[in-house]
Amino acid sequence: MRQSHLFTKTRKEAPSDETSKNAQLLIRAGFIHKEMAGVYAYLPLGMRVLENIKKIVREEMNNVGGQELMMTTLQPKDIWEKTDRWDDKKVDNWFKTALKNGTELGVGLTHEEPIVDAIGEYINSYKDLPVMVYQIQNKFRNELRAKSGLLRGREFVMKDMYSFARTQEEHEEIYERVAESYHKVYARLGLGDITYRTYADGGIFTKRFSDEFQTLSDMGEDTVYVSESKKIAVNKEVYTDENLAKVGLTKDELVERKGVEVGNIFPLETKYTDALDVHFMDNAGAKQPIIMGCYGIGVSRLVGVIAEHFADDKGLVWPESIAPFRVHLIQLGNTADKATALYESLIKKGTEVLLDDRDAGAGSKFADADLIGIPYRVVISDKSLERGGLEFKKRSDAEGAIITEEELFDRLK
Ligand SMILES: Nc1ncnc2c1ncn2[C@@H]1O[C@H](COP(=O)(O)OP(=O)(O)O)[C@@H](O)[C@H]1O
Ligand SMILES: [Mg+2]
Image (cartoon, rainbow, N blue to C red; front, side):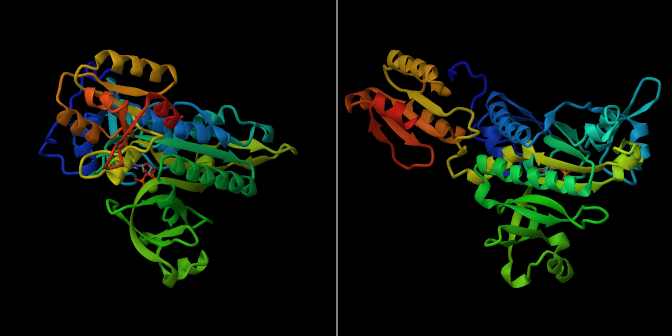
């Protein structure tokens, strides 16, 4: 993409009502647009990051056997009444609306009920199970306080997967398989070393815990207790001597840290399948309960977490796996023809390039490149050509080096 065609521009200042660092940076760099508190639009650069994250999540969910679908935002009230989750006293962050004739509707905040209802039409015998379905979709939650930019929104993008199993054993095998795939997702996003599977509140019935995935970072709202050697953590909300004993941990091996919840998986037992009367017939023709799990990843929250976590005092620093472009090619002086030729050969090799072909000085182009945070900066200028080629610098490096075009292709391989 040519930067002269990109309609967004960088800005010196973020809106004065925006206090979170991730949103400030993403707004200043032209990745997102703030509609209102907790509601952000994705502009071309932000959209590319979001789509790159979705692609990684999709690949890993497909790898563990998930089938992608898309449920609806508008929700009929009756299925939520069956599970006792319609009442505002039971679920306090619904957005609700109504048809012209007065029929009440819910605006989807999660999708256990509609998913169970839909797959129930296709599950009859034990041969129809197990099943895993997922979607990547906007969720709407009337949060009391939208805060921390993309970390806590009222409209946000979530990947939610649901599994349906015939036995507890089958459920547990799926649950662990998905937990493993979550580690792969966070590793591919560059967060592997700092993201911990974490015992947390929210499990129901027999299993006392849900499992959160917490990215350790000072921006986090959650307090977690971490065992680095065992690569496991415990959320403060379940941090008691009794619970620690249950999971074989002791207080002296745990260190207190701040974390951001980037994912949460729950064993749901038969709570929703029973309530919505979705069962299967075993091979003797007897009606059996279906054991369910659900698995969330905060896709848009991850945009904010990654933006804020890796940023430096000059701007964003994207991990290669999700950067909006791989190379920021900066054309300076009388190099337009050479820059265009290089741009085209990079694209031919499958490299995603943002070409800064704007009529602007080196200082402002470099400042913009730093703010936008594309992993590799390549400068083509009269000076670089005199010195034998191109100036190449990683976003995270302080100094660049002069290399030839061939060397550039090599480094980008
Ligand atoms: N208001 C929100 N804004 C952005 N992301 C959210 C929000 N609420 C939840 N998420 C993300 O979606 C994931 C799954 O949500 P879930 O665990 O159901 O929500 P909660 O933890 O609020 O009960 C969370 O781990 C988090 O990463
Ligand atoms: Mg949660």
